[in-house]
Image (cartoon, rainbow, N blue to C red; front, side):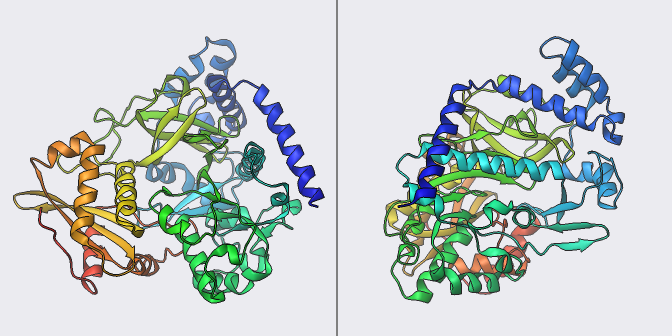
Length: 524
């Protein structure tokens, strides 16, 4: 009998019962969070320059919203290039008390999916603690999933991320956030953690997958955590190595997959072919800038924003009034607090955090599915959408169209990307879809994706009758996408293939594809 598991499950259920009695007040939680951040950073160089003392006074003595009015008035909005150029480069050089008290010893390397050069995102001690705290909260929400057996709480927890062997550079360490957090796992969790410290230090992604595969049969895994594409690759590798039919032949107790980074829906049909039975999927939103949101209960349509643990959220309506056609934000956009948003509308996200991030445009766009519960879904990136001629095609639209088409055609779509191109005298979209298996009808796939997009997006449907005259589609082996990422040094960890290619990326990708696979242009 799983005595420890039974005790843990009872404890988790009791904790959840207590938490449910607390009424969520998003505005109060966020006000308290911002004032704590400002209080902590008031004596930093950033806090002194931008009047954090005044924000605090308004928070304590002004009317209900005075603190936010002051914060918006005094503190400018930043993107990465601006905040790094003015502030973070000094923290990287070892200077103290720049945007957060003390010296920053860890920096997460992040290029997102659109930038060529690495970004250096500060990860303070306060942020590391906040991520651990939110991770524990997420584990506690498993008590909401009453169908999970008590024995599950004693099983292994496989986290597939970057190397914990961080690069030491001039007084600081740098690496993937997943590697930084894994290197700081609490002692009490180490008995559950896989692949263990030795494999976790491995920097070569191929070697890491090989070593995990060799030891997989010795582990009793109940949870898997990671980016869908890499988890699916690992599971396929393990299945092939042991010559079994499903991953449950190796890990019979696998019951939960915590995924994040990209929409899981396009991967789901192919992923489920690797399973002997259904498992529970839990979505998370962990970025290099912090643990932003996670799914809190089985019926949730989205993920609940973390409102009371070191992150203050602002929301910029993702409209033409606030963003250019290329996704560049205007100088003084409209910004809203959590109580001012509306369900169903799209927003770009600004973060202020305990890593010394202030009014920072993270680059993601989200939509509220429940304002009362502060639940959101990620819809894409501010610069990852297609609007060559007013079609306003979001990544959310693309994911859904690919998912529906793949299900209808019984395809295992592993990756895809889209490029907006000039097609004299007008415009066209060129899709590249990575599919496992031969004999894929590219014409049919192209037509189905196009048809679904017309149903999902009225602007797209309109422009398909006017300026957007053509849609092309190239079917590729999924390995071509991974080869491209390997060539860019972006294998594994938190790296994702961009859903939208723009500018120089298009030329590079077209040249890469031309080396191996001819393009198919379906008749419309």
